[in-house]
Image 1 (cartoon, rainbow, N blue to C red):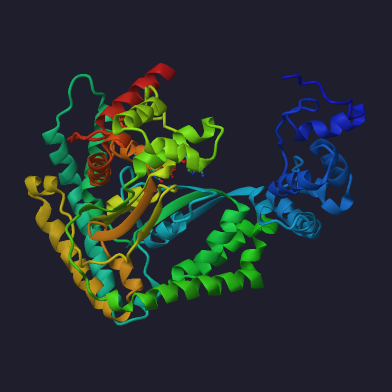
Image 2 (spheres, rainbow, N blue to C red):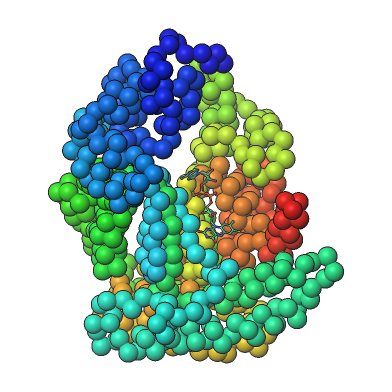
Length: 540
Ligand SMILES: Cc1cc2nc3c(=O)[nH]c(=O)nc-3n(C[C@H](O)[C@H](O)[C@H](O)COP(=O)(O)OP(=O)(O)OC[C@H]3O[C@@H](n4cnc5c(N)ncnc54)[C@H](O)[C@@H]3O)c2cc1C
């Protein structure tokens, strides 16, 4: 590509002024740097209504425009973050005018922020992670981190406000402490048992072995952790996604979530105020009320279905699939390469035999050397819905797949719970069961008075029900990623079952899912840890 400028645009003085803020003064493709989010967002928003280049706009309308507060905003060596926040606030009117002038919600996607949410409950973390588009979260793992440490002598779980104000407070504390005491007491014997079952061999380093066996013990015990367990979630996202996330949190029935709206407003207000301010405006209040209304409408419509507590064994049920999925996918494979209308392509596809259709699908999947080689968008034409019952731990892992539509029923205790078979073999299941049973009894007690808050007391070993609607392209990703040997057995089983059901109903469409692993492993993390050793050795 010819990277020469269309015309010599900047004088030597202008070039010197611009240089710190762009990766190139002359290239047509360049990056912005050293600029606050609001400036970058405001700059890009000008693209739609200006024939000037961004570098020219930056110079004329920001750097040389006192109203923009540019020089206070942009960090000089003596300029602290606090100075920047003050400057952002001072220049807010200017940025609001620029941003609002473009009247489009998508402008708020042009600036982003990193936000850390620490010591929140797992109930709250899952609600934050329901966000799909525009937010990338990462959460403290129950597999790599011990949950035995205390803050000021107290285990790390949320003392939920309405429970603590109720007559159930003492019983709640006793049951939650019981779960954490049991987790702490079982950790060392569980590690010892895992190590006895899978002794270290000569080609495994001490580090890899210790990591893999600890991870296995944490995996076996995570069912003891209640949904009240405190966790840390880091999120990177754009302003629009955060605005919606804050609004959803603010509309929630749980006090912790409403508190999070305020806390997020403080954190994001200090970083990208112009992009998230509507969450706290009358427009935000109206959206909060609307979200609460439609949730209530759903609850009322389902009134006759509540309180049934229908038992269901853990497992995966395929509840919806298209009979013509193969034809739809093949039509979509051919469509972008045809020069006739959709109906004509579909009519042609209707004349093909199953063997011919299968052959087109195979060709369209190509040579998949690794699981990252994924077939194209045509595979999004096939849609499926699954009803799933599995332990909460498995749900927590699978929930993070943002391309799916997933909705859960409230966390409860009526669908039973999983005791890892390894704990039974190790003879460590009795204390596990009795701590879970005590938590179940307390959850039932709280549920009578405070159904929403009772979810905090539910241990992650308990089963829950949720639905996953997904397309075939995402099924390739989920089934292959989530059956890799290093995964937790609970979610590997769900991914494997989804694959088996898809394979049975649509063998031609799933023939290229080569990387689904249907085997079982004793020490799931070991190979991953060995690979990590090799990578470390190669780096050194
Ligand atoms: C073995 C294992 C251990 C894990 N451990 C942890 C852990 O300790 N803590 C933790 O928080 N998570 C953990 N995860 C979850 C992981 O971080 C992912 O959130 C989860 O697997 C969803 O996968 P995904 O992002 O690939 O897919 P999806 O969300 O299903 O998205 C599908 C694809 O769409 C694209 N995509 C979707 N959203 C975006 C976006 N915003 N930006 C760019 N591309 C996007 C990506 O290509 C992605 O692969 C673990 C996962 C595995 C398999």
